[in-house]
Length: 120
Image 1: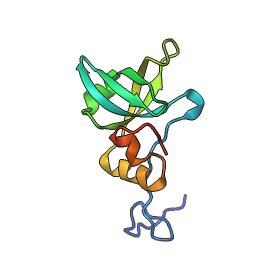
Image 2: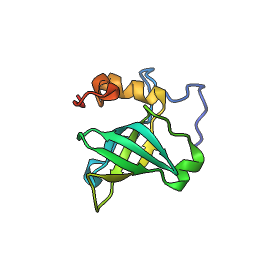
Image 3: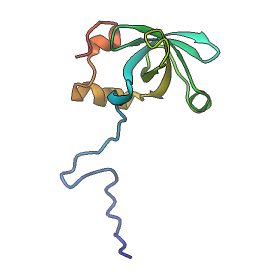
Image 4: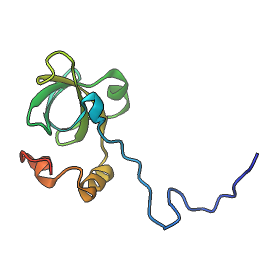
C-alpha cells in the first residue's frame, strides 16, 4: 500500500487552480436549472425553470431536514414523469459560491437569475 504525504494544498491541482466540485443538471434524466420564486409552505415552492415553465416543486424530506430554501436560490429541478411541465422535485440547492462559479463558466446568465427568459 502506498501512502502520500500531505502537502497542505487542499483542493488544488498541479497548476494551483482551485478545484470546485459543482453538480450540474443531468440532461439525460431531464433535470433543469431553476430559481425559486415563491415559498408556498409544507415543503412546496414555485420554481422558474430554464425552459420558461414555472413548476410547483416539492422539497424531498432529506433536503428539507438538511438545508433551508429561500426565494432567489438557484436549484436543480427534476420534472415529474406525469405533469412534467407543471410539477417537479428540487434535487439540489446551490450555495452563493457555486452560483458565482456557474456565472463565471457561462452555465447560467445574470438575466436568468434576475427573471429574464434566456439561460445563456
